[in-house]
Length: 99
Image 1: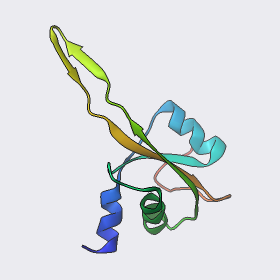
Image 2: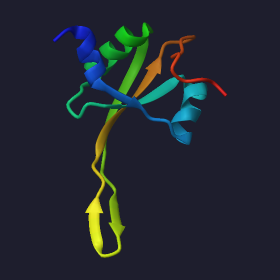
Image 3: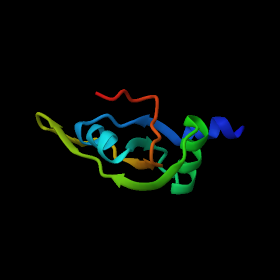
């Protein structure tokens, strides 16, 4: 498997919430859902290769699933892994538009 395809397998999708969007402008941080087995080094390499930017710091965390119910049926939403990536001073990602 080529390295370029591997980078896209690590990054699943950007997380677009109010909290993540606020961090984009204030702290130059971007949040992504990543593969369950992705490491900080793999996330950093994928961001740098795909977006051609310099990554300063990567924080990776496992988000637990949420309990959900519909009537008497009780279930769980699946958990996921997310990464918060801080870019070097003066760099941005083109995928997110500033408001």
